[in-house]
Length: 590
Image (tube, rainbow, N blue to C red; front, side, top):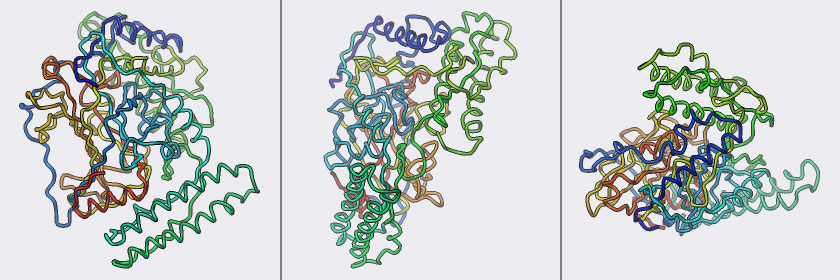
C-alpha cells in the first residue's frame, strides 16, 4: 500500500456516523443526541495532537536484561509477508472469541489465512498460511492509517462470511484433542533432531486422521464406537511414536521418562478451546438469550450546561461501551466459575466502572451548575432475558449488532488510508535466565491493552519508536528524523504456567518475566515473540500529526491502546526447531 496521504471528506464521516445512529435506533432506540455527540460529526476521528512526540525527546529506555550463565540467546525469525493478500477484519478471536466485529477497529493479519471471530483450533489447523515455513499461527494487530480528512482509497473490504461460517461449523462438531508432546520434551540433542521432528509431524498427522475418521464414521456403531474404533487405536499409535522420540533422545542424552502418559486423547466439544479446559466461546448460559441491562442515565440528568456537554456526551458513550463489553464477556465466559461468577466477575466490576463514569458526569455538570445528586443509584445492573424492557443506558434492551467495515474498509471512528507495513518482523527470542521449552500448540497470548481508558494501564506497553532509535520506546506517536521510519515493537509475555493454552482473562496463563528476565515459581520460559512493524509514513504527515492507529471508539486513537495478538498454530516439529535454535544460541531464519 503506498505511503502517500490518504484522504476522505467530512461528508464520508457524516455518513459513517449517521449509519451507526440508524443501526442503533433500529436495534433498540438508543438515545441519539446524548450518546453519540453532535449529529453529523464523528466523535473520535483524528488523534489528539498532544499524543505525538519528537523521538529525539524520548530518553533511551529500552534495555534487555543481562544474560545469566546458561541464557538462551538464539533467535528464530519467520517470514510471513506483509499482508499482501489484504486480510483485514474487526474481529479478535483471542480476546473476544465469537463476537463478530467485536474489536470495532480493523486488524492487520499475517500467518493464518482464516483468522476471524469464530476461529477455533480445528478451523485454524485446517487453514492455509502466508508464512514461508508453513507456520499456521495467527499474528494480528490494529492497522495504522493516514488521515488528512480528504477522500482516501483503500482496498475493498473482503467479506469474512465464508471463513466465519466454516469456523462456526467446525466449532459445532466435536474434535479429538491430545496432550502436547513438544512442550514436554527435554533439550533435544542435535543428533536426534531429525528423527524427533519426523515423529512430532507423525503425531500431528495421526490426530488429523483420527478427526477425519470421526467425521466419516459419524452415526456408526454403539456408545463405545469412538473409544474402540478411533481413540483406542490412536493411543496405540501415539505410544509407539512417542517411544521412538524417547529412544532417539536417549541415544546421546538421558532418555526422557513418563512421556507415555501423553498418549491418550479425548473427544471434546470444540468451543474454541485448546485442551486447557478454558472456553473461548459459546452462547449465554443454558442457551437463553440473556443480556445485562442497566438503568438509563441520560434521561435522569438535569439540563447539561454547554461547558459540560462534551464531557457528559463522552461518558454517556462510555456507559454504552461498558454494557456492550459486559454482554460480550457474558458470552465468552459461558460455563466458567461457580454460581456467583456472573455477579463477581461481570456485574460487580461493571457497577464499579459505572459509578466512576456517572461520577465524572456529575462533577462536570457541577462545575457550572448544581451538581446532580443520587445518580449512583443508577450504577447497578442486572442479568435478564434479552426480550424484556428494562432498558440499557440509552433505552435499548439488547446490545445492537456491531457494524462491520464498509466497502472501503472503514469503521465508525476508524477511517483514513490503511498503511500496510513496509516490513513485518516476527522473531522468537530466548530467556536471559536459561533455556526455553516449547509453547503448546494453540496457546493464545496478548501484548498490550486495547482499552486503557476502561481497564487502566496495568497491561499497556509503550510500543512506538523510529528505525535507528529502537532503544527508545514511547506511548505516543513518534515524529522521526528524516530518513528514519515509524516503527512499532510488540513484545509478548513468555512465562507459561505449563498447563493452560488460555485463561479467563487471556493473560494469567502466560505472563511477562521480571526485570531480570526470570519467570515466577511455577512458570516456564517459552520462546518470546517480538513483532516489529515498520511504516513508510511521509515525514510531512508525521509533522502534521496526520497518522493514527485504529482503536475502540472509547480510546480515541490513543497510541497507548496499541496491542498485538498471537495464537500458536505451529506444528510440533516447527516449534521444536524454534526451541532448538534458541537454546543452541543460533540465528535462524525460516
